[in-house]
Image (tube, rainbow, N blue to C red):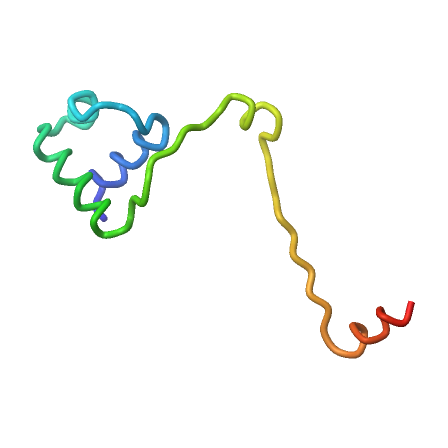
Length: 82
C-alpha cells in the first residue's frame, strides 16, 4: 500500500459515500486511477466494506474499550467454591 492508497483510505474513512470524481480531485489523480485503486483494495481484502457512522454512536460513547480477564491455575478452581 503506497501513499496514494493511504490518502484514499483516509478520505473514505471520513466519507465512505464520497464519489470517485471528488476523490480524484482531492487526491490530484484521474478518476480511472482512483477507481482502479478502490477495486484493487477491495479485491485484496484491504477494504472489506463501507459503513454509516451515526451521530448517536459518536456522541453517546466517544471512547469505548473492552477488557478481557483470564484466570489461570488453581485460583480458577477456588473461585467455584465461594
